[in-house]
Image 1 (tube, rainbow, N blue to C red):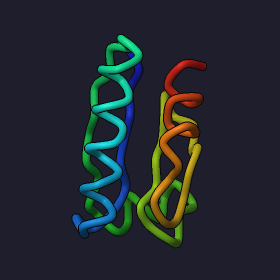
Image 2: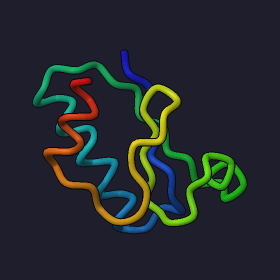
Image 3: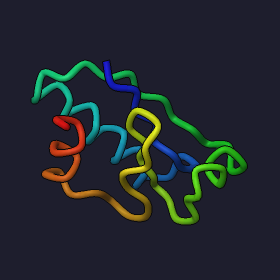
Image 4: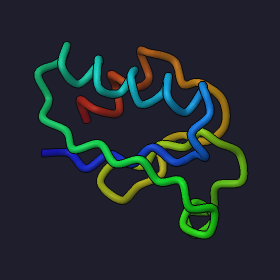
Length: 78
């Protein structure tokens, strides 16, 4: 199971990113555990200054703006 963290304060882009990750995981048949991280200190701890951010299995894969659906699929399939 992949551990996915969506980093952000809970804005619409952050919510859309979380929904995108969940939908792509379901489409690909990849088991994921999605955690929302809203604490600014925790977000900064990943070196992310622009949200939303995505961390998969401890590795930052995206920061700032909505990711592309095909990128999310690629990250989850890796």
